Length: 242
Image (cartoon, rainbow, N blue to C red; front, side, top):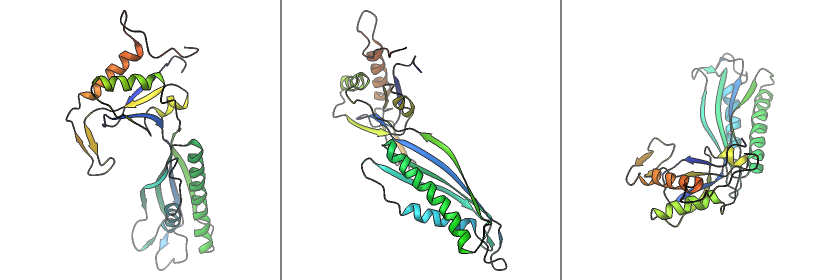
């Protein structure tokens, strides 16, 4: 949108960190469908769970670069109806991420190839063609980078310094900033204040001590970017076409 000159998101709690990069991600829901049958009486039919297991094992053995950081995760699985039944259906949700758009597409392509191969291999194992697989993309966030010396970053650093916070670390994450960064719009994610840990686990925690610093930092950053009538000029200039 040409009318948007800058973008700020609130994400995380570490007051010493500014998110300046966009970690890209793609997410897939994979569903296997087979004939099903009795585990003994129909032995020899392809199994949806076995096919999914073939894929998971190969995905788990993938090698990814440490830089740019690139990851994969099979985060949710389901399938079958009981120990005595050859699974008629099975499904899994997969997340792949990278700080590089190129590496993100590479790992996504590799995962999709493994999924297709797993169905073929399960059918071949039993001399069948009765098992199929369907893949649905359920998430797509582009990766991106920007100049860490840009005005939106400098404004945030100055705001944090005014609150007595120095030694700022910069990093990339998957946030609401992904889209604007990918479109060339200056964007950062600022910390919300407090402390937290164990993200996305059952032991995730949050300590609100000094959490007021988060809103204060965001407010000061916005004032620096927009300017104050009669006091200061905007640090963030209007984008061409705005």
